[in-house]
Image (cartoon, rainbow, N blue to C red):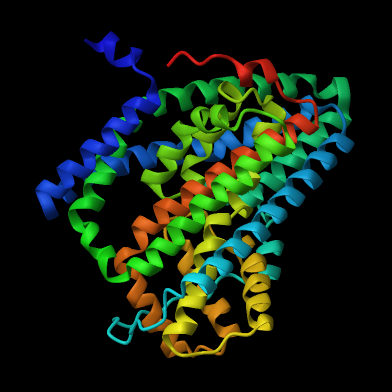
Length: 414
């Protein structure tokens, strides 16, 4: 019986758990929250492995590149690609919001006001990349600071040459060990996903979305279009690879992203998927995925753009072409400072809505209106973010000749 369980593809086990979780949560109602602790255990396990995984795999990957110039090349291509996809995301979101006008005729004055701290300013976010104490950064799980120190560590080992060979071998071995632990943790995923989805379905329910069908429909449709047109276009048109195969091979990461609502928590799964399923070599996977989990917020860009236009329409604020451009610019810049945690997109609203002249009191009402159904939408936009991380990772790997195309094109045993 146990052997048959492990013979089933992981993504099928997770998908089955997700469906059963929705059914169980709907039937049990609020009582389903009693099993949420199982999902919390899964998230704690996966968060436990994030920092050591990012550190050792990134150091090992940098050393494997062989030269700082290659690291710079990967970094430039990665950031450039993420910028392009984010612009595409906000463009799709604003266009759909302007066409479907989800806020016209909607009154949100009944929402219970909620105050939210503004997103961390971009300048402060950039300064925080440099850790005052690398050990403290590792202990606190400050991913951007960990990435910065890991890059320096890798470059230092590279420049030290033969004298640093023992350290390089240690990091390489540690990387293999951490990846094995990651695979063990992933076997817990079906149980964690079941509990998390059951809790959401039981306490929130699908009914919470019925009052805002136009807004929800616009956001979900925008996310779908972005995944198919932008990410599918990168794989099919730019890279000339089979897009269907790409989407089949990343479903493990998408399902974990959907259930946890956290790009950061999905990071270990994304790295494993990139290396095991997509044929991306370790140096690229271990550098692009952590960076993407921190700065790539395409789903957030769609969400915030649509909500900003929705808010303006609801409050009767006329938007011109300049206003749309300001929303796009503000969202693109602010998304870099968004934490990869559930509902982090709400923290962007104060800054973006402020550009449109929406007062703090009105923003509080908007946030209160969104909170009851934000988690389901967060699940959708996190799935978009993780899909984008893997699409850009595949692209950078192919451009840098760190890509096994035969592995990507293999006939999957499904």
